[in-house]
Amino acid sequence: MRFATSQDVLQSTKIEAIEQLASLGFDGIELVIPDGIHRIGSSGLELDPNYDDPESDMVFSDQGRSQLSRRSEKVGIELVSICLSSLNLREGLTSHREKEREEIRQFIERAIAAANDLGISTILVPFFQEASIGDRRERVRSELIGLSTVAEGAGVTLAIETDLNARENADLLGQIDSDSVRLYYDVGNAAWLENDPAEEIRRLHSHIQMVHVKDGVQGHSDAMLGNGVVDFDSVSSALRDVDFDGWIVLETTTKTDPAEDAYKNLEFVQKKFDPR
Image 1: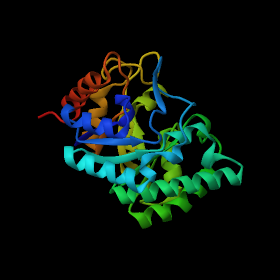
Image 2: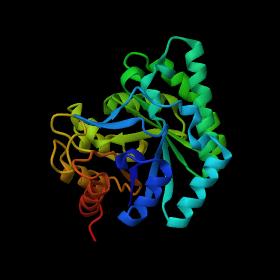
Image 3: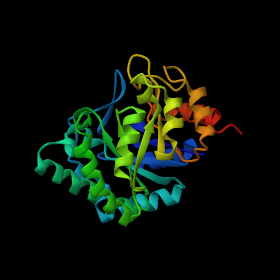
Image 4: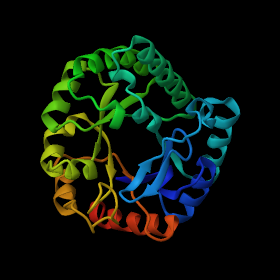
Protein backbone atom coordinates (compact mmCIF):
# COMPACT_ATOMS: atom_id res chain seq x y z
CA MET A 1 0.00 0.00 0.00
CA ARG A 2 1.32 3.45 -0.89
CA PHE A 3 0.58 6.85 0.58
CA ALA A 4 0.07 10.22 -1.03
CA THR A 5 -1.47 13.52 -0.07
CA SER A 6 -3.58 16.13 -1.73
CA GLN A 7 -1.45 19.09 -2.73
CA ASP A 8 -3.70 21.47 -0.80
CA VAL A 9 -3.03 19.69 2.50
CA LEU A 10 0.31 21.51 2.40
CA GLN A 11 -1.33 24.80 1.34
CA SER A 12 1.30 25.01 -1.40
CA THR A 13 1.65 25.30 -5.13
CA LYS A 14 2.23 22.10 -7.06
CA ILE A 15 6.00 22.49 -7.37
CA GLU A 16 6.42 23.54 -3.72
CA ALA A 17 4.33 20.60 -2.52
CA ILE A 18 6.29 18.07 -4.60
CA GLU A 19 9.54 19.34 -3.08
CA GLN A 20 8.17 19.13 0.46
CA LEU A 21 6.68 15.65 0.19
CA ALA A 22 9.90 13.81 -0.56
CA SER A 23 11.43 14.93 2.73
CA LEU A 24 8.26 14.01 4.62
CA GLY A 25 8.27 10.39 3.42
CA PHE A 26 5.27 10.35 1.09
CA ASP A 27 5.22 8.24 -2.04
CA GLY A 28 3.06 10.49 -4.20
CA ILE A 29 0.93 13.59 -4.64
CA GLU A 30 -2.58 14.34 -5.83
CA LEU A 31 -2.50 17.52 -7.90
CA VAL A 32 -5.43 19.91 -7.39
CA ILE A 33 -6.90 22.14 -10.08
CA PRO A 34 -6.59 25.02 -9.57
CA ASP A 35 -3.86 25.95 -7.06
CA GLY A 36 -5.24 27.50 -3.89
CA ILE A 37 -8.88 26.49 -4.35
CA HIS A 38 -8.89 24.97 -0.84
CA ARG A 39 -8.38 27.04 2.29
CA ILE A 40 -8.25 25.94 5.91
CA GLY A 41 -11.58 26.85 7.53
CA SER A 42 -13.60 25.83 10.55
CA SER A 43 -14.46 22.46 9.03
CA GLY A 44 -10.97 21.76 7.65
CA LEU A 45 -10.23 22.02 3.95
CA GLU A 46 -12.92 24.23 2.41
CA LEU A 47 -13.46 25.38 -1.16
CA ASP A 48 -12.72 29.05 -1.75
CA PRO A 49 -15.09 30.45 -4.39
CA ASN A 50 -12.59 33.22 -5.16
CA TYR A 51 -10.30 30.96 -7.14
CA ASP A 52 -8.21 31.61 -10.22
CA ASP A 53 -9.38 30.40 -13.62
CA PRO A 54 -8.79 26.61 -13.58
CA GLU A 55 -8.12 26.67 -17.32
CA SER A 56 -4.86 28.52 -16.59
CA ASP A 57 -3.50 25.82 -14.28
CA MET A 58 0.03 24.69 -15.13
CA VAL A 59 -1.10 21.14 -15.95
CA PHE A 60 -2.72 22.54 -19.11
CA SER A 61 0.51 23.91 -20.58
CA ASP A 62 3.39 22.00 -22.15
CA GLN A 63 5.87 24.00 -20.09
CA GLY A 64 3.97 23.41 -16.85
CA ARG A 65 3.72 19.66 -17.39
CA SER A 66 7.40 19.53 -18.23
CA GLN A 67 8.22 21.27 -14.95
CA LEU A 68 6.01 18.91 -12.98
CA SER A 69 7.51 15.82 -14.60
CA ARG A 70 11.11 16.96 -14.10
CA ARG A 71 10.61 17.95 -10.48
CA SER A 72 8.68 14.83 -9.48
CA GLU A 73 11.24 12.56 -11.11
CA LYS A 74 14.11 14.41 -9.47
CA VAL A 75 12.76 14.05 -5.91
CA GLY A 76 11.08 10.65 -6.38
CA ILE A 77 7.46 11.68 -5.83
CA GLU A 78 4.89 10.01 -8.08
CA LEU A 79 2.13 12.08 -9.66
CA VAL A 80 -0.76 9.78 -8.78
CA SER A 81 -3.92 11.71 -9.58
CA ILE A 82 -5.49 15.01 -10.56
CA CYS A 83 -8.40 16.38 -8.53
CA LEU A 84 -10.77 18.66 -10.45
CA SER A 85 -11.91 20.52 -7.34
CA SER A 86 -13.30 23.48 -9.28
CA LEU A 87 -16.13 21.25 -10.55
CA ASN A 88 -17.82 21.49 -7.14
CA LEU A 89 -18.54 25.19 -7.70
CA ARG A 90 -20.80 24.59 -10.72
CA GLU A 91 -23.67 22.24 -11.50
CA GLY A 92 -21.46 20.96 -14.32
CA LEU A 93 -22.38 17.51 -15.57
CA THR A 94 -25.56 17.58 -13.45
CA SER A 95 -26.85 20.78 -15.09
CA HIS A 96 -29.99 20.88 -17.20
CA ARG A 97 -28.18 23.38 -19.42
CA GLU A 98 -26.52 21.65 -22.35
CA LYS A 99 -24.06 24.53 -22.82
CA GLU A 100 -22.74 24.16 -19.26
CA ARG A 101 -22.43 20.39 -19.58
CA GLU A 102 -20.52 20.83 -22.84
CA GLU A 103 -18.10 23.27 -21.18
CA ILE A 104 -17.44 20.78 -18.39
CA ARG A 105 -17.06 17.88 -20.83
CA GLN A 106 -14.40 19.86 -22.70
CA PHE A 107 -12.65 20.77 -19.43
CA ILE A 108 -12.55 17.11 -18.33
CA GLU A 109 -11.31 16.05 -21.75
CA ARG A 110 -8.46 18.58 -21.45
CA ALA A 111 -7.64 17.12 -18.04
CA ILE A 112 -7.64 13.61 -19.50
CA ALA A 113 -5.15 14.68 -22.18
CA ALA A 114 -2.95 16.40 -19.56
CA ALA A 115 -3.04 13.34 -17.28
CA ASN A 116 -2.07 11.10 -20.18
CA ASP A 117 0.89 13.35 -20.99
CA LEU A 118 2.01 13.35 -17.34
CA GLY A 119 1.62 9.59 -16.96
CA ILE A 120 -1.17 10.05 -14.40
CA SER A 121 -3.73 7.26 -14.48
CA THR A 122 -6.52 8.72 -12.30
CA ILE A 123 -8.63 11.88 -12.41
CA LEU A 124 -10.90 12.63 -9.47
CA VAL A 125 -14.27 13.97 -10.69
CA PRO A 126 -16.14 15.29 -7.63
CA PHE A 127 -19.90 15.67 -7.26
CA PHE A 128 -20.46 17.81 -4.17
CA GLN A 129 -21.98 21.20 -3.34
CA GLU A 130 -23.33 22.72 -6.57
CA ALA A 131 -22.53 19.50 -8.44
CA SER A 132 -24.27 17.14 -6.00
CA ILE A 133 -25.99 14.44 -8.03
CA GLY A 134 -29.24 14.11 -6.09
CA ASP A 135 -32.05 13.07 -8.43
CA ARG A 136 -29.99 13.84 -11.55
CA ARG A 137 -28.37 10.42 -11.82
CA GLU A 138 -29.62 9.68 -15.32
CA ARG A 139 -28.03 12.88 -16.65
CA VAL A 140 -24.73 12.11 -14.91
CA ARG A 141 -24.81 8.50 -16.13
CA SER A 142 -25.20 9.63 -19.72
CA GLU A 143 -22.40 12.18 -19.48
CA LEU A 144 -19.97 9.75 -17.84
CA ILE A 145 -20.67 7.07 -20.41
CA GLY A 146 -19.64 9.55 -23.10
CA LEU A 147 -16.52 10.61 -21.22
CA SER A 148 -15.55 6.99 -20.49
CA THR A 149 -14.72 6.46 -24.15
CA VAL A 150 -12.31 9.41 -24.12
CA ALA A 151 -10.75 8.25 -20.85
CA GLU A 152 -10.35 4.68 -22.06
CA GLY A 153 -8.58 5.86 -25.20
CA ALA A 154 -6.09 7.79 -23.07
CA GLY A 155 -5.57 5.03 -20.51
CA VAL A 156 -7.05 7.22 -17.77
CA THR A 157 -9.62 6.33 -15.11
CA LEU A 158 -12.27 8.86 -14.06
CA ALA A 159 -12.78 8.26 -10.32
CA ILE A 160 -16.03 9.85 -9.19
CA GLU A 161 -16.46 11.04 -5.61
CA THR A 162 -20.06 11.60 -4.53
CA ASP A 163 -22.37 12.06 -1.57
CA LEU A 164 -24.41 9.01 -2.62
CA ASN A 165 -24.54 5.95 -0.38
CA ALA A 166 -22.99 2.59 -1.27
CA ARG A 167 -26.08 1.18 -2.99
CA GLU A 168 -26.58 4.34 -5.05
CA ASN A 169 -22.92 4.49 -6.07
CA ALA A 170 -22.92 0.81 -7.02
CA ASP A 171 -26.09 1.23 -9.07
CA LEU A 172 -24.70 4.27 -10.92
CA LEU A 173 -21.37 2.61 -11.70
CA GLY A 174 -23.12 -0.58 -12.73
CA GLN A 175 -25.23 1.35 -15.22
CA ILE A 176 -22.15 3.09 -16.64
CA ASP A 177 -20.41 -0.32 -16.86
CA SER A 178 -16.95 0.91 -17.83
CA ASP A 179 -13.55 0.12 -16.35
CA SER A 180 -12.65 3.74 -17.08
CA VAL A 181 -15.20 5.11 -14.58
CA ARG A 182 -14.69 3.97 -10.99
CA LEU A 183 -15.13 5.28 -7.45
CA TYR A 184 -12.89 7.50 -5.34
CA TYR A 185 -13.92 6.46 -1.83
CA ASP A 186 -13.60 8.94 1.04
CA VAL A 187 -13.84 7.45 4.54
CA GLY A 188 -14.25 10.86 6.19
CA ASN A 189 -17.12 11.90 3.94
CA ALA A 190 -18.84 8.54 4.46
CA ALA A 191 -18.67 8.78 8.24
CA TRP A 192 -19.83 12.40 8.21
CA LEU A 193 -22.82 11.38 6.06
CA GLU A 194 -23.58 8.77 8.77
CA ASN A 195 -22.70 5.80 6.60
CA ASP A 196 -20.44 2.97 7.75
CA PRO A 197 -17.13 3.24 5.84
CA ALA A 198 -16.07 -0.34 6.59
CA GLU A 199 -19.38 -1.77 5.45
CA GLU A 200 -19.35 0.39 2.31
CA ILE A 201 -15.77 -0.60 1.46
CA ARG A 202 -16.74 -4.27 1.59
CA ARG A 203 -19.74 -3.60 -0.63
CA LEU A 204 -17.99 -1.31 -3.11
CA HIS A 205 -14.49 -2.80 -3.23
CA SER A 206 -14.69 -3.89 -6.85
CA HIS A 207 -15.45 -0.29 -7.85
CA ILE A 208 -12.87 1.52 -5.67
CA GLN A 209 -9.96 3.15 -7.49
CA MET A 210 -8.38 5.16 -4.65
CA VAL A 211 -9.16 6.09 -1.04
CA HIS A 212 -9.22 9.52 0.60
CA VAL A 213 -8.67 9.72 4.36
CA LYS A 214 -9.64 12.55 6.66
CA ASP A 215 -11.34 12.87 10.04
CA GLY A 216 -13.72 15.28 11.71
CA VAL A 217 -15.56 16.24 14.89
CA GLN A 218 -17.56 19.42 14.28
CA GLY A 219 -16.89 19.39 10.55
CA HIS A 220 -16.17 16.71 7.97
CA SER A 221 -12.40 17.30 8.02
CA ASP A 222 -11.55 19.40 11.05
CA ALA A 223 -9.53 16.84 13.06
CA MET A 224 -6.19 15.12 12.91
CA LEU A 225 -6.55 11.46 11.91
CA GLY A 226 -7.75 9.32 14.80
CA ASN A 227 -9.25 12.23 16.72
CA GLY A 228 -12.64 12.36 15.01
CA VAL A 229 -15.64 10.21 14.13
CA VAL A 230 -13.94 7.78 11.73
CA ASP A 231 -13.29 4.27 13.10
CA PHE A 232 -9.95 3.66 11.42
CA ASP A 233 -9.54 0.19 12.96
CA SER A 234 -12.67 -1.03 11.16
CA VAL A 235 -11.65 0.78 7.97
CA SER A 236 -8.22 -0.85 8.07
CA SER A 237 -9.79 -4.28 8.61
CA ALA A 238 -12.17 -3.74 5.69
CA LEU A 239 -9.37 -2.69 3.35
CA ARG A 240 -7.40 -5.82 4.30
CA ASP A 241 -10.47 -8.01 3.88
CA VAL A 242 -10.98 -6.83 0.30
CA ASP A 243 -7.24 -6.94 -0.50
CA PHE A 244 -7.09 -3.23 -1.35
CA ASP A 245 -3.56 -2.41 -2.40
CA GLY A 246 -4.03 0.97 -4.06
CA TRP A 247 -3.28 4.52 -3.07
CA ILE A 248 -4.31 5.97 0.29
CA VAL A 249 -4.44 9.75 -0.14
CA LEU A 250 -4.56 12.25 2.72
CA GLU A 251 -7.11 15.05 2.45
CA THR A 252 -6.52 16.27 5.98
CA THR A 253 -6.60 19.56 7.83
CA THR A 254 -3.80 21.33 9.69
CA LYS A 255 -3.82 22.55 13.27
CA THR A 256 -0.35 24.06 13.51
CA ASP A 257 2.08 23.69 10.61
CA PRO A 258 0.83 22.07 7.35
CA ALA A 259 4.00 20.04 6.75
CA GLU A 260 4.33 18.88 10.36
CA ASP A 261 0.67 17.87 10.54
CA ALA A 262 0.87 16.07 7.20
CA TYR A 263 3.83 14.10 8.54
CA LYS A 264 1.91 13.17 11.73
CA ASN A 265 -1.09 12.06 9.69
CA LEU A 266 1.20 10.06 7.39
CA GLU A 267 2.67 8.26 10.41
CA PHE A 268 -0.87 7.46 11.56
CA VAL A 269 -1.95 5.85 8.28
CA GLN A 270 1.33 3.99 7.88
CA LYS A 271 0.87 2.35 11.28
CA LYS A 272 -2.86 1.80 10.83
CA PHE A 273 -2.98 0.54 7.26
CA ASP A 274 0.50 -0.77 6.56
CA PRO A 275 2.11 -1.95 9.82
CA ARG A 276 5.62 -3.28 9.33
